Image (tube, rainbow over all chains, first blue to last red; front, side, top):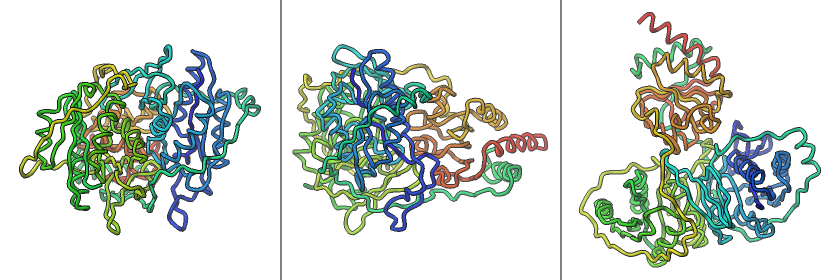
Length: 255
Length: 327
């Protein structure tokens, strides 16, 4: 089975988000970037499908030059090939799911895979729509929050997560787009051999299509407002602990 | 194009609790923009539920078809697309449920639109609504405008609006049959199921110690267990901990896990992404221990300790033991 996996590069989780002086985006200069974690699970699912059913895994990422590092990582973990959809400016921020989907559509139409997998959402913008909008643009069926994939003849049977501990199985004809819930399986690490091999694998570059506008405009960024007045406890740990126990007992009265 | 169409979620198990929060959001958007609100309840049999929804005072359309009994994205899109074309609303408002996340982006795409998903609120600026949603795991709030013509699609996050009690006279209910060709539904859904009986009902416990990514390693859970024992609390976790298999899924708090409201919720190394926060923000007293002073969990905490949980937790266990001896 030929599978395209869409991976996004996002700022590392523990980054301090500082705004640029104009205030309209975060300052990316000092940031470290990593593979969006839900997409790492999508890659894992694709690699496991290939191991059980054969085929090919093509990793795709849209963004500026730096996204090639997540493609290299995908190749090191076992992806066969990679495609970099070169995008800069607003398109590279990945804020608009329609723009993301239009970029990915370009690669998917060229590759004609049977399955497209991607994470259920991204850790930076969290819109959770790119896979679904991509499916809509391609005219393919989709399923979101997928926890397990059983390949069948011309179809897949997936297990979807619903809310509150409920699940559902669903059959979909191929080709289809699936967005993968985290925790579907243990993530693998790239081996030294994999990293070596990745150097010789192809990353093809495709220019982003010129159209692609979704219609959402970022009007501003702000730091979150505190909904409760947090009392911060200062001092060395023993002192913080003593203050907290005191407050929990006599102020909050929960001990 | 005018008016607001609120699409509520009614499943086999009854109303999704976020439905009426989304309706409250739609009514508030209606007050702010002067647009009337119409409610749509897609269901196999919406009868009594539609009448219940009408108690909020907005006209209700019960959109019925047997293909809406088991959820499939194509069925919902087939039911709603013609209705939206016919009514021509300025806004389509939905609860940001898992079901909405599955079908609404594709529904919006049919209109060449993008869903503004997961919104936590809106404000009117220069005469038009500006919607707020979290970015970077809650570290920043993005304020967004639509640049497209109607219809524009918005979904509201859990807790964005309080589901008020219905007031005033019941509005009329219209029952319609949705035009769905079952042969065109590509997804073949099977009935929902639960994996296992939940061993712990976190919803009814008084104290919870919850751990997140900051715990670092499975072996470090012992420290959290000791603290939980010292507090007479149950141990819970955010999603990544359960994904790693370090704790069973029934200990997970958040939108894909349990919703809890204990007297005391002590969060160790939890950053506070919205998927977790929606499951625990109803707690009476929230304590957060985190190295990152920017962690969004501090926005909702009553008491915050910015520090290393591996230093703070042992100190806390020690202090609790000491204070028990002297109590």
